[in-house]
Image 1 (cartoon, one colour):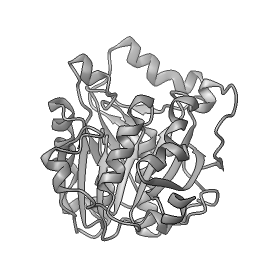
Image 2: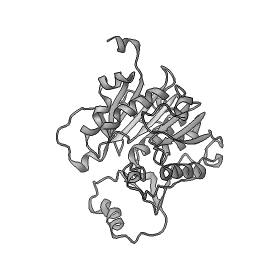
Image 3: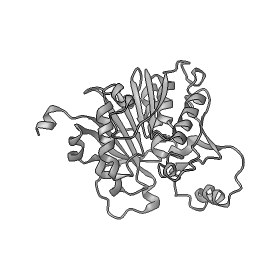
Length: 303
């Protein structure tokens, strides 16, 4: 039976004394149908437990003191990262996972032997899973803020160890700063067309950044066989993020959709719909969109 997406996560640290934290942790009891879509705080690390890893991963969260850092919302672990980590695990270890509506099988999320880049990584959970399960090389990026990058480096140092891998083999993992669309930096110029897979988790809530994100994805994808795995929750509203997948704007960056569908926190899938009308806030928090992008084919360009 498919386990709930959030079942692998637990807070780790001292008991909370903040009334707001007490209320937040009680929401699942008060409203049993309500799904938590963001996890953790600066005072508590997270334990991510998988039956396929030798031990839990300890995920630290940034403590953003500056307002600009707080606006990045990288000081939480979001459900999109949980879902991609689960997909990577299933694909790389060949674990059965129903992806029927996406017209993809588990092997389509296989990271074995691939060069992987995560943008807007936050906690870098999908990248860590890739490095532990068989990727060739992993690069983790986020906005070049000292607060954000220091937390990413901490997560890599604590978790990217051979003893955390089922095979005891670990891919090299590096952390770099990258602002979407800024392609003239030493990191961007040195890594153009380098990556087999680009991970994008919950980065679509800023419509004004969609074009820059498209530019970065297209810049870093290696070739026609390379793919970008894009997953985002609907908690900020479908309208804000759906424009990212419009064919015309993807075409401007030389990209196209290979597949797109919706999946909830219990593994239920449904077709992608551009507009579902007025969506209940609690209900839409349960759902995520899964999109697979690739370089635009010549026929698509000509069409």
